[in-house]
Image 1 (cartoon, rainbow, N blue to C red):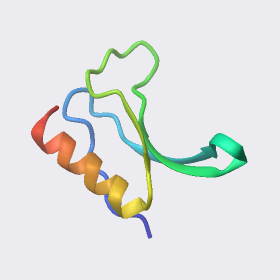
Image 2 (cartoon, rainbow, N blue to C red):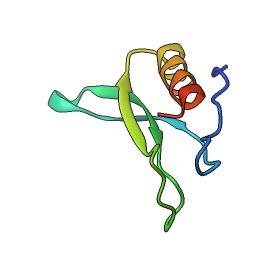
Image 3 (cartoon, rainbow, N blue to C red):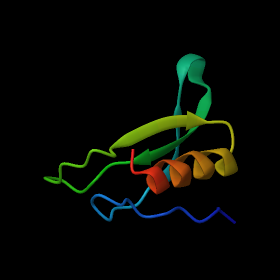
Length: 67
């Protein structure tokens, strides 16, 4: 079960977890916030995280502060 991710305070969009290939064919876990096409959002973000819990903590803390 994934932790709850807060919606973006700027555009109302959501953050999602993605797994993608990193260097040396390793699979990286990332948390990403890409607004819908045509939406300019200052919170557009992508970060590699070690665990789902850490990624959720980063995102939720970030949107609380609005930066």
